[in-house]
Image 1 (cartoon, one colour):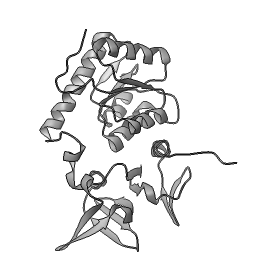
Image 2 (cartoon, one colour):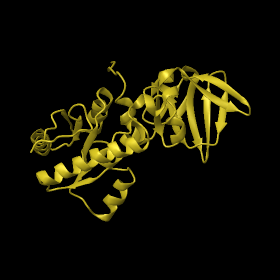
Image 3 (tube, rainbow, N blue to C red):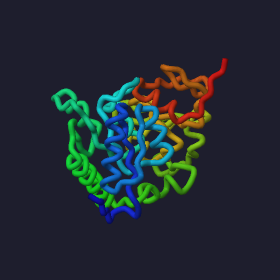
Image 4 (cartoon, rainbow, N blue to C red):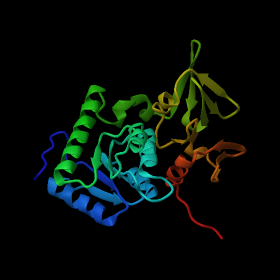
Length: 259
């Protein structure tokens, strides 16, 4: 069965996140049969995030019960919040509690084990179709059209009454959510409070410069001076880092061990 997909100039990139080697290799073989040649396997949340950062996939097949500090649903939440890559869950668990947890991370579908080739093919085709449909309905063809001002310069303009004040990304240290209000903290003790959601603000910022480290905090990556298991340090300022964000954040960093 060969796949012909007119919405892509080449075979879509698909990442398989599965910690059982036999299942991962079986899935990869199936994808090859379908004509999806650009595939990669990750067996943990850390590996998956590194793969996403290295080469943004078009779709992720994500096992619900991967081993490690984060299960697949926690990773799904990070992928949805920080990377905006569509994914389909693979699961042996279809109980109410698992489904309720999973659905809040906005997957594009579920593949229930044990699965057949037809199950996998249908889930992928529907997910890729819905991805294209959502992009088309939003008028989005690529990242530059998603938010052209964000990706074409080095600043954001913040409106204060009748004045639009320019704030360089490099001057913006961290962003804090408090209910329906967001405060943007910049150098020289400048701060700006706006009535927006944290997602609305982060959608306007370049994803390679700002990362969410807590449900209520986003930091500018270049401003980070140290990290421990509970905090991100911005010189003297400590920003809390959530457990589900710690591995995702540290996986993006170049690290070495010192004695």
